[in-house]
Image 1 (cartoon, rainbow, N blue to C red):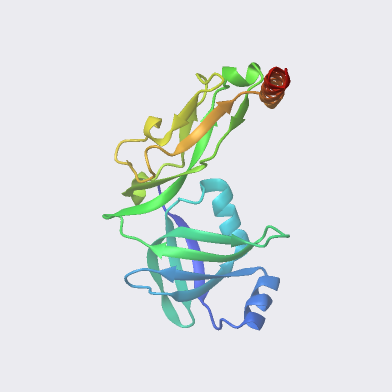
Image 2: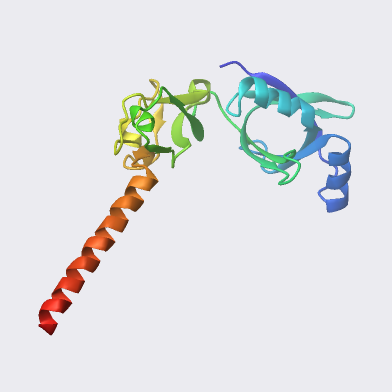
Length: 215
């Protein structure tokens, strides 16, 4: 995984008016956390980060260059920690960056990508994925773009837990092993029919018992 360049500049203010103004001009506010940068406010072109996310994904290593007027740019290695989006416009509103060392392991999340087709769905089962991101620990250079989950062997009633996942060498899983990742459940109409049948049977038995008591 190679680093991608991102130019930023120190943020002049954190007032609501200032943040709204730079957003209207196509810039995004952010904060960089780390040993050398503890809560430093920055701003950068939103389109630049959108391109990076589209082409390389959220876990790519960024070579951040902080440009200051009249001074030589300072360079830092960072990762994207959190991205906040506008609820209606879906545009990036704020980004948290984490300064990292390429020699130390870090904790992050990786998307889970389903592959294959579950036979249980062809039989009418419902596929659900309660867990979409896996918490892992590894070197920044070893962060996978995603972790694949093969569902081609799932019939109705089958499931996959975190403990069943295969991760690349050098990656440690931090999520709880018994956490459910994906499951194929029985069709709702079958469940409803069985429930209705159970109610009907229970009602018939109750009526029979009542008749016997009255007799």
